[in-house]
Amino acid sequence: MWSWLPAEEIEAGAFEQITNLAKLPSAVHVAVMPDCHVGYGMPIGAALATKDTVVPYAVGVDIGCGMIAVQTSVPHDEASVDRVRAILLRIYELVPVGQPTKGDRNAGSFLERQNSETLRRWFEDRGSRDPESSRVRERGDRQVGTLGGGNHFMELQTDGATLWLMLHTGSRAFGKFICDRYHDVALRWCSRYYAPLPHKELAFLSLDTDDGRDYLIDMGFAMRFAEESRKRIRERCLSAIEETFGGFTVGVDIETHHNFAAREKHMSKDVLVHRKGAVKAGEGLVTIPGSMQTGSYIAEGIANRLALNTCSHGAGRKMGRGAVRRSNVGIDIRSEMEAEGVILVCPPESDALDEAGRAYKDIESVMSYQSDLARPVHALRPLGVVKG
Image (tube, rainbow, N blue to C red; front, side, top):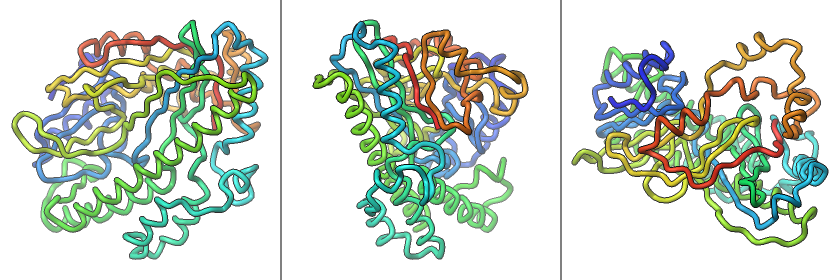
């Protein structure tokens, strides 16, 4: 195991999870990123290489979650507060946020009640086997192209010269269904063929079984669902910018996944690398956000064999959502951000306080710790954000 976060900064729960990963019979290598914090089974901000097995919770419930970052030619000095606010409010009109249902604001007109090709193929190939498939398909059709809540966002940023768009979302209920389904299968498989597990959330499947192979296929469908969802959101966000500024050109335009598993070769072994809250590095630019109140980075990912060619996917949480709210009772986060020059747009019933900058680790420290994994190319600061 190799860590890019000093041992004294690894929270006890995450350290225990890292130890459990190393105890898996098929574990080959564990790499801990500087944004590491507790997740289900495996910490968020880590990479795990296994031999001939897949661990559903080492990918996580939001399969294919990732980022898009787009640099526009719009000059920073033209992005006034009023214009930024107008764009954010238009994005909020165009892209459903939170947890949309059939009757939610504009979800129907946005999705036009059309089934996604990705979902159609998945249910033809896999979903018809499961009694819950109709319900999941309905939710998936409704959720493709929607943001969701939690740490997902659509943000306007600047590098000091031009306006940038950054967005973060994943596979919503569709990916969670796949993860939960195969985790249950893995629990049954492990209870029959392997005991005891270091932790039940690390139940795994052999890649020599139909279930193990099917997980990778279905994971791929969830990743394509997430890609399609981000594509639709990107289009709506850029159209909102165009409505305000007119035509513009696009410079840097990148997309990264940070919850997935891939067959790779490391340390002269053919392994399955699980990246959970972690980005594959060494193949170009990567996106590393801080928080809605702090800076973000576009960086050149650096291949590093001890890190399994991986870098962090962001700053990483240092406080749970409940802890943030308990320690900040009475804080008006929207007003606080406005005073900092950052506009927050979110549903009336949500103040996004649990996503405040104080909930996250210092992005500068994270970048410093992983200087051999990611080289900063563009430093970005937030102008405004839409949250669920």
